[in-house]
Image (cartoon, rainbow, N blue to C red; front, side):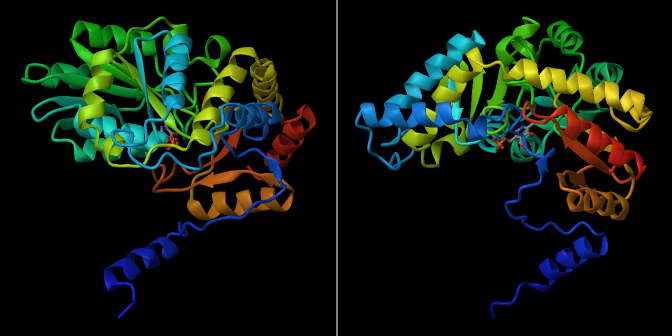
Length: 377
Ligand SMILES: Cc1ncc(COP(=O)(O)O)c(C=O)c1O
């Protein structure tokens, strides 16, 4: 009676056959080339202490916010964080969500309407795809970072009625590369399309004081998605845009409405992580490591195996789930935590090792890990 239905068992079996079965790992002490904690903020004591002291000093002895933000959950700290984000990202308004997944799901499931059109990069994050699937709009994918293909698709469908939306990422999570955002923004302007950019992996890494590429390039976009679970080392996300967009999301975004808000402790951590971002020296250190990594892959003649990237994410293509899994395991046995990215997460033949760089990786670790890579590829 409690057995898993046969269709589900078969799906698990297929994953096993394709050597793509996912399993939960456990904590380890391996050298970190895998986490999204680019600046080491997840273990930053100053942020931890500042959040704790703020809660104690303000007598906020509360473990949770007791409800949705529309009911009992709109803690004062939400206001503080959202104002801080407006100032930092130079925008009219910010709305905090429980996670980046929730933010993308909530946005794309409620903003584009029936007969509207969404143009999305084929490598867009799963949370955006899921949101698009839940919306009633039509959606067309364009080739990854390919402006010509986006132009063609827009040309083909532009005469259809309805609003047009274009969505991309400023740093792609599984590739580490960046689209030509200026050109995409101009194309959107020309075709009166609304541009949405997910900056999850750019925040804390690119732009002045890690404020992302949209601000750095002074682009006017319809919405930005920023997340706090990556370089900021905590949890949660925000959608940045106009006051009216915020009002709309508060009224119609189901992943915002029908869920308990973040705890005061989570919000205080976000607040002080944002403050730390404005003064940290770790972004510079991270960039030194990114440059060093790139010079080492050049020196070791590995460059053509890597996807070109100026971000903290660097991917070495190793086709085949079996092969990439075996190599990742060998890295782990040599004390390096590097994750294989398997199909179907990436297309078949494009399986890869994903090296995430951090400010706390030493040059010696970077050299060692790349020298080890030369023995496998
Ligand atoms: C581009 C992108 N957007 C959104 C998310 C989801 O963010 P979160 O981890 O806060 O749910 C991720 C995380 O994997 C991501 O890579």
